[in-house]
Image (cartoon, rainbow, N blue to C red):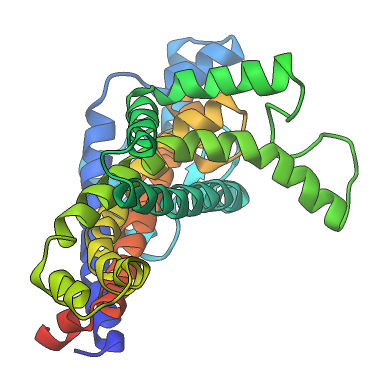
Length: 325
């Protein structure tokens, strides 16, 4: 099966999956306690029955559940995610405004965690049983066991408050008016702490997986044959062991894309990073149903897209999979 055929097939399945996710999220969210109209009326200082009824009618909350569901699903099919009654703007505009920040954060965190995790895993496997291996394994366990929110708070406290090396909050310096490369550098400085914090846990996971996979593949018959032919350890490790050991890591990276996006909620909240994770947190507190549903749907689409990319990368790394398909 060609790569194009795989993409078309996956996209067709993704559309059905997103439809099911949209319906399920809508049902679960509307089954939760709380009334957005009551929240808005209370904030306006006029939480009487008439005001609440007017708000419910204005936002369509007084309609039967089936009618609300049909309007939402038909709107999603037309790329209309509804209107945020809390922020007074279309949901698609709110998400489009914040999505680039989340993509930047999760993308950098993913690259850091994957590259560093694989590199450290290879280094640990090459020195198995030695002090370097024990040290790297200990740090991996430490990063794996550290709660994300605690690591984020400690990073702000140490590197921003105490040492003053890096900014601890925001996307860029407010009111600085930077342009060009100066703005890029300013954003990069603000990105360091949240990206490293988000990537530490996944770096530990990829390192442990790479190390275990490298040690398992190193005992395979083709590796012993390569050594018998006089190939150096570096050549065997780079051309034969790593290429086969990397496959489980690629699979794991695709499966953990959802966790990376989920972790962005805590990271963006602690570091005041203006992404969709923080938008979802604020919307949950305000019971902004349409925005919550929109963020859920976009997050699910990102996970599905990431898995499609993983399938393609898997076939490029191991052509035998494409041949069997």
